[in-house]
Length: 231
Image (cartoon, rainbow, N blue to C red; front, side):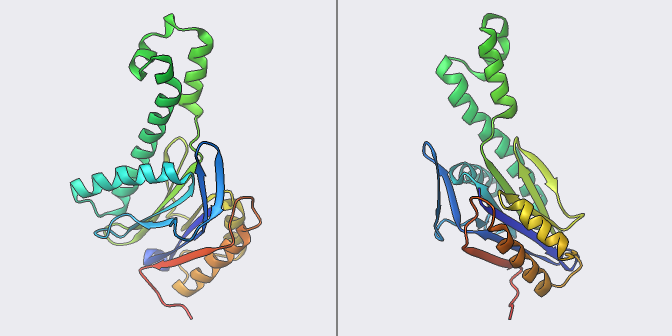
């Protein structure tokens, strides 16, 4: 499922973003392969300073991204906190639509007719669909990072579409390599008050440590927002 990391520096003056270059896709079974052309650190729009980092199914993540981009373009949204909330809402909606197509439509049901017709349906079918709606997992986790009115923020979005702001601790990691990356940052003494160069080095170290996890590729993309030269 790969790894993505985001960490603030200088108390939100900027952030460092990192990912591997392992692509995960389900068509129809899951495949994993390294491909540097499939970007996992994506600028949402040129008019905003918000970035999306994706761990998991690239098809699901791209579907969510395109829905968010339509809203951003239509409403002229530039602030990262609002964009993060859009990702949360569209993550939930795309997840729900996939469940409707796989569990409801083959049975001739809509979401409305399912909820209205519980008494007429076989109990086992009701339980199966309800379980899918509650626990169905698109195997995709997201980070949204960038600037609001004055400072940089980091958010994560996980199944079933819950949104968390990580500004209190300064960093987030998602994907199968996330636990290793998090422990690396903790053990290295990461603090969000650290300068850009130090945070860059700690994030780079955390990414390399995460490579022991299944599904994490050895290729690395790492950037600073705003761009900072590192020597």
